[in-house]
Amino acid sequence: MKELMRTNDPTLIAYATALLEGEGIECFQMDVHMSVLEGSIGILPRRMMVRDSDHFRASAVLRDNEIPTGQ
Image (cartoon, rainbow, N blue to C red; front, side, top):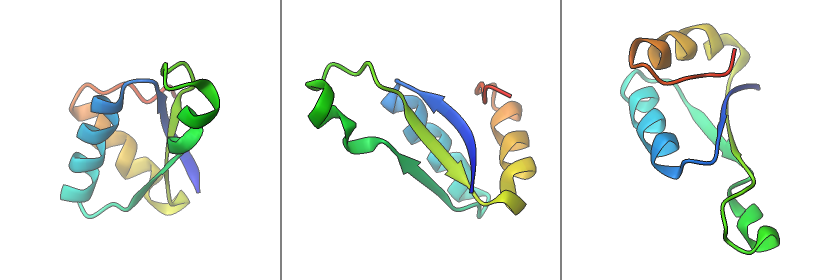
């Protein structure tokens, strides 16, 4: 799996997930439950991961919708 994006914004992750699922690209969120350790203040970013083979297409989907991927 490859990291597609990293953000503290849960709404951005939800939007990106909906876009990717609409294109048939499976994604997985990592670090979702880190809020237990940080005290729910949202300072630790979540990572969105996709398959290596889907990374290029997933990056294009996010870029077309003006969502920064960090790459």
